[in-house]
Length: 149
Image 1 (cartoon, rainbow, N blue to C red):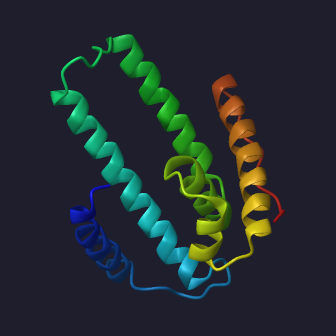
Image 2 (cartoon, one colour):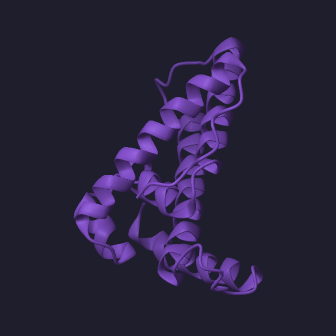
């Protein structure tokens, strides 16, 4: 993300947090995790939008067939369903690592948790996403998320 866009993204994060009514301590997440999750979603949306804009104007990009577009859209919808099935702590770590490309130490610092917790959450999140993705592909309902780290 270009540095010039960071202030706008930060402003969007806090505007969205305000629109949601602020953080409410319901025992499911810490305030830092809550704001990090909002940031992750907005940054992911920004990257996705930016990538689409570039693919529309960038020369040499391969033209996608309707079949590929449909397949890609279905795959992304399945992945979104899988991520929605994760609790906030696991989803945040998964997205920060897999989508945003952050290192485990950076994630630990951002979320205020030990690096070992990041490793554990990432391991469990990957397994749950993998299982849910396969289940959704077969047309079966993913297993509900249980406990874990």
